[in-house]
Length: 255
Image 1 (cartoon, rainbow, N blue to C red):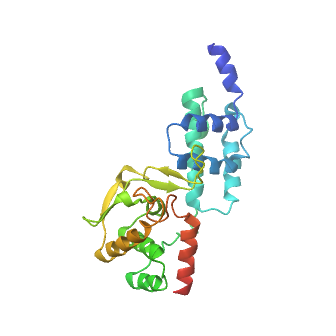
Image 2: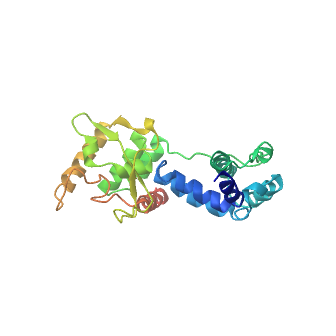
């Protein structure tokens, strides 16, 4: 059996390894991580048919040049580099493939001429100008919640009315909406846990925002079939990610 298995493994290619690694991770990581694995696959097409036992530093340099030809940020190139190393570690652990001679010669991507991407943010004054052109109560509440409570987009869209404590003026972040179709529900999104353990949190809500949320709740509660399990920014489904983004772009232009 040992000889037979060794023979089988010797014919494994990177395409096989990517598939095996993906299947192994199916019940161990979030759907967002699995989606990231899928998104990275096209960047490995030029080495996917290389046998693992034949992989050498020249193959790695060929892959590296292929990645450098792409118009992507250095940060994402290094994400791909880390994924390649994770695949190699997986192959070494489960299939006894010796990548050591290549592994020790590999290096990550650097670009001293690349300007670091600036983080864009609104000052309080700029945000008030932005908010002044928004007349829809739901969107006003959404943008204020993002700005004053520091939520991620998926956390905002995942808020249900159960997560709002009107007495204590707080909201609780305990789930996240990701743009990954859910086969079991047929929905174009999936509800997951927050990004990290520290992302579970309870946040105070400013008085002016709690007043707006109370008004929004009074309106929503008149809808047929309303329940507190409905999404604050949506209804029985969360607000579409592109709808929120397009609204923000429109308001920023008008402001």
